Length: 327
Image (cartoon, rainbow, N blue to C red; front, side, top):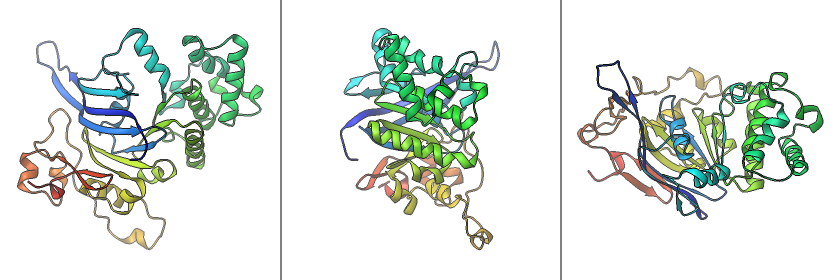
């Protein structure tokens, strides 16, 4: 990974208590369970996995929207794991979130102008005139022009693609160093998905912002990121440069995800895809050892007994799998 680390996540876990009634003891859901990674300044990373793999929980925990159960989050060299009060407000200003549902993310009683001005007011940025200039500039950056036509509309007056542009503008208006985009195009029409991803990528590069793009759709990552992290059942099982991971996935789960990408060639659609059987495990009662072993065609005895370590197979390509570790 090139560049200085902006964010370092060390053995991060987020567990939730699941209550079953007044008398029964609560169960523990291990949504994120011992995750490690670094993010360089200005780097874009895609976090990929099936629904329920822990992607959104990881993103929100790193942003401190969820309190970590254990582990550390180090941002710009500062441990932000336990920040509160004014120090947490500093971290809020340095980070941003683009949510999955642009309709649910926008307060219906506010105009677009008020939605974009609110973060500036909360963080006491600028005079009223300066804030107006910043709001209009933010609308220009996400190509909602002429800005006067959009600034004083309400969310219900905009399309899904236009609303997601407002969400991007709101996430970037404070010029954060780090943004999490959680499935930002999954609820949009296919015709505008690439357009929105391309816009986000252009702004990310222009402003030098570090991004984590959360998605279940591996085929969209080529529009956005330099690296891909593959997540399965609360663990990151593979980390690699984007082109390398798509060309040569090492973890059996990564191979299955690549194999499941639809092929536009009609002839290739006829062949049977080698997709692993079964469903992802329960995060309340995950299997021992490697969490993928019940579905893995290469599972060995050690996979069923012991969690695999992270192994750097080649420079920048890390995999959590006993096939590449010395058992």
